[in-house]
Length: 384
Image (cartoon, rainbow, N blue to C red; front, side):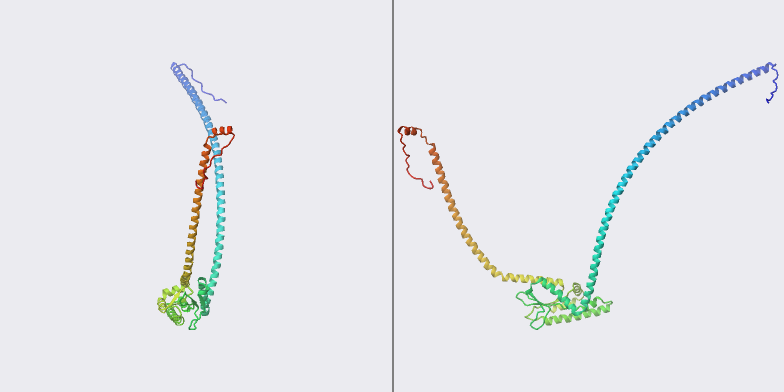
C-alpha cells in the first residue's frame, strides 16, 4: 500500500510562492548541474575506459611481443644449450678417451715396473742366497782360501798369457806359493791368496768397545803372523822379486784395512809385502802386460833393423829402375819430337807443290806429246 503524504497547504501567500519559485529554480539549477556533472563524469569515464582499453591493447601487444621475444630467446637458449652440451659431451668423450689411454699406458708402465720390481726382488733373493753361501764359504778357512785362489786365478788368466804365470809354482826352497808371475828377463813375482779373514769378521761384528778392541788386537796379530810367513817363505834373495803380493779378495776388507789398520799396512810394506785388492791386482797385471810388450819390442828391434835395411835396398833398386825408365821415356819423347818435325816439313813441301801453276807446261806437254820428268836433286832425310 502506498503511503499517504500530507496534503500541501494551499498556495495563497505571495512570499511563499516566491520562496517556492526560488526553491524550484534552485532545484532546477541543481538538477541541471547534477545532469552536467553526470555527463562530464560519463565523458571522463568513457575517456578513461577508452584509455584503459588502449592501454590494455598496448599491454597485450607488448605482452605478445615479449612472449615472442621470450620464445625466440628460449629457442636460442635451447639451441645454445644443445651446442654447449654437444661440445661438452665431445670434450668429455675426448677427455675420457685420453684419460682411458693415459690410464692404460700408466697401467702398462706400472705392470712393467712391477715386473722389473719382481725381477729385482728375485735378483735380491738370489743375491741374498749368494751372500749367505759366500758367508758360509768365508766362514770355512779352507773354503775361503779356495775362494781367494779362484778369484785371483780369474784375474791372472784374463790379463796375462799362459806362459807368463804358473799356479802352485815350486820355488828353490821347495815352497809353493799360490801364483808366480814371470817378469821379462827378471825373477818371478810371488802372489799369496790366503788371507786371515776371521779377525776382520769379528771386528765388524763387534757389539761394544771391548769386543772391538779384542777383535782389533786379533786382526793385528793374525796379519803380522801372515805377513811374516809370506816374507819368510816366498822372498828369496836372487831367486824372486824383492816384494811379494798379499791378495785380499774383497774391496771392502781392503778399505777397512787401509782405514782402520794403517799400522799393519805400514808393517807389511816394511816387510816388502804389498797388500792388494782385486782392482789393484788388475793394475799390476796391466803394468806387467806393458813390460812384456816393451820386452817383445826390444827383442824384435834387431829383426826390425834388418828388415828396414832390406827395405832401404829395395828402395834404392826401385830408384835406379825408375831413372832408367825415365831415360827411356826421354828418348821416346825425343824420337816422337823428330817425327813430328819431319811430318811438318812434308806437309809444307806438299803445300808448295800444290801452289805451283802447271798451265803453260800442260800446253807444252800437249803440243809435244812428251812428258819430261821433274828432276830430283836429293832424297829427304829423316828429321828434315
